[in-house]
Image 1 (cartoon, helix red, strand yellow):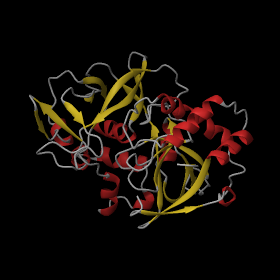
Image 2 (cartoon, helix red, strand yellow; image 1 turned 90 degrees about the vertical axis):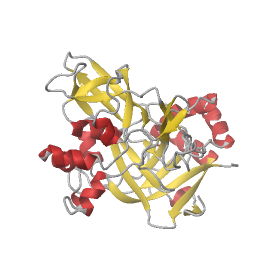
Image 3 (cartoon, helix red, strand yellow; image 1 turned 135 degrees about the horizontal axis):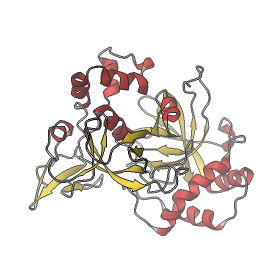
Image 4 (cartoon, rainbow, N blue to C red; image 1 turned 60 degrees about the horizontal axis):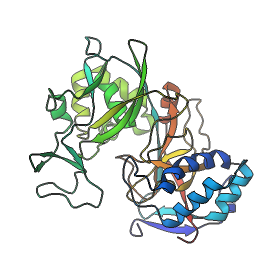
Length: 363
């Protein structure tokens, strides 16, 4: 990472509102990730190995009674050293994501023609630094394995054209392809079925093709200026002309597969890459090839809001998730929560930010 960014040690007093932030809320999110870290459990999406010092801090956090924000703040100060991460090119950059709430059907119907697919049995996912088999380029994070032979997995266009048909992979049916696409970008969804039952879609893998931002393509083509880009504008564009929208979506060759899980606790967030439920306003997706899950990260940023003006979002986050587009030493994706309002807020966040990692003392 030294080739990508400079690291500058900071005092906690140099963080904007460190003394006013709710460190207790961050500590509770920290504990969620610490449980599997302390037990050595595998993450849902493998990332860099956490330093032993972080694991040791996690074990200590699980044993110490932290009752309020002041005690939580003291805990972070005692066990971590802040380092500001300054990219050699550009700045720290924050986007946001959410968990959509979607009406779906358990069976294919005229009103619900678009399938959500579970992970195919012949899909093999590679670790970031794992050598690829002969014939598979390093840019692919997954491949198809059949009868001992590897091949590139079908891309979005091929899957839509029926490359995976007849395997019984369908687990739910949606109203249109724009809904499926946005669920795949967000990585999860809450489904309310036509029979009144509810369930959750959780990430189960991807076809391994590189991710391409269709929002950026629209901005570069002058269709929607980047400052005006929002989830509503994007969805409206995709639905205005189905064929044109489909062609644009297919330029993102990456395709996400899901598992259908029962909605055990609606108050809990979806499962992130670390394998734990996400916490609204405290869970951050980071580049898993650079930063370990469980790492506290301080952010300073003032994004637009649905109310109009920009508002500070300075706070302590916990690295609990990752994403195909979340790449770089000071790149983050802020989990806004579930539902339409969270989606409206998330769609407005595209801002430079100050990115400060809390690195374990002694690591």
